[in-house]
Image 1 (cartoon, rainbow, N blue to C red):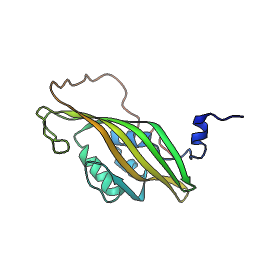
Image 2 (cartoon, rainbow, N blue to C red):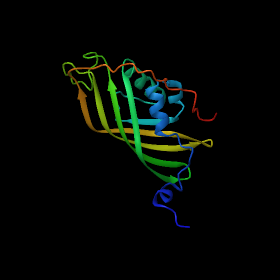
Image 3 (spheres, one colour):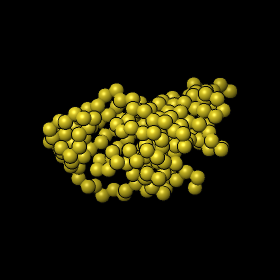
Image 4 (tube, helix red, strand yellow):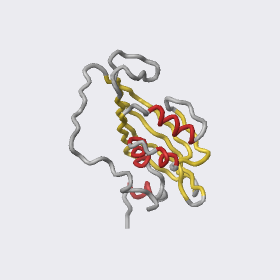
Length: 174
């Protein structure tokens, strides 16, 4: 039986990697304890708007950075490759939309009158490491290719009658 290019590409990639779906969901729902559990103890980070020495610093940094920010993160089109039996590398295309009250936040030191958010585009480069039979993110680097500031007439979207995210529905290891 001939395998598709897609199947061949992922045949050596473990199905239980901590995915960007979990990362994005935990960041956007501000589930900081669950976010921390995605990373190995020795995880390293690069390219973010705050400096970090370890996964605890990273979670403190991202939670502080997003404290008064509404965020929507999307990661898609993964490229995943097994390096060896303990390591997998991945690249995910990303888009994020961050919004805040006008003039309440200065992004990356550039002040724009009336700015109320950004649309960001780029990539997450990650390495996953298996420790004690479980996979963790051991390196994460954010590379932004484009940042579009949102400014001018902020239109607050209406509060539609939709259910909130169910943070318990798809809990790993459940």
